[in-house]
Length: 174
Image 1 (cartoon, rainbow, N blue to C red):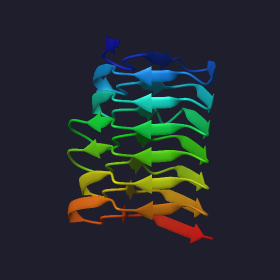
Image 2 (tube, one colour):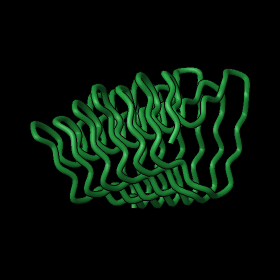
Image 3 (cartoon, helix red, strand yellow):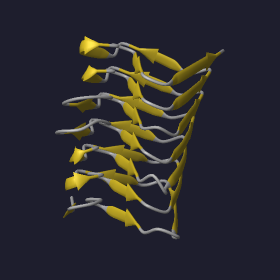
Image 4 (cartoon, rainbow, N blue to C red):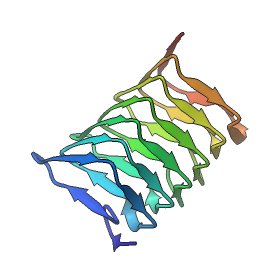
């Protein structure tokens, strides 16, 4: 795997768009944000997996406040945040996930699976399972999270919110 300060495998610069179809981002490290991928621009990923990536502030994919991601049919597993939140994803921008599996991720503070800052995160037909963090084992959000036909199950929080720890708005349908 790769190593960098921001985005151990991939760093998507502002104004840039990265499209990934299939493949695996595996075993990368970041000393700051995004062990696997750092997104300042736009990431569109269909298929594939983000596995065993680690960083201080997000293990899998870190989305900067000016960034946006759309993931479809992606598995995010065994990623870890060593300091701040978001084992699989730390979203400070806009994130849409469809038919994704977020499982076996961890964070030392908030959002073992998913961390959402003050903006928007949407999950459709996803599973958030078996993730862990002291606050929000599955999901920790300070913004708006919309869950449609999404399962949040088997997550563990050492302190509060095994499934979800919400400081903003969470809407679940289906």
